[in-house]
Image 1: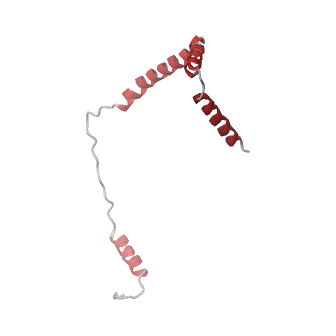
Image 2: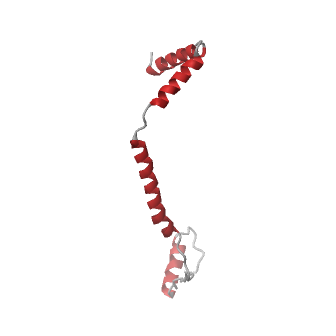
Length: 106
């Protein structure tokens, strides 16, 4: 039997026994009392306070950098390169070179 099947069978049997238990409410109350009696560690408090501090620092660093005010609009210049007459002739010759039938004069 695989480990998963074993765990599944055990948990199903425990679930059936828990549903049929006579003193179900009393057992649940005892478990909750045991949980509430435990002392809480300060480790959780340190984790939460350090997380809050890290979030505050990130807020002070990220927020001003993400909100930048551009007072002057950016100007864009579009330039197209001009082809020389020799380059135009070379491109025309390359276009003709790929054709199967020559219907041109030269």
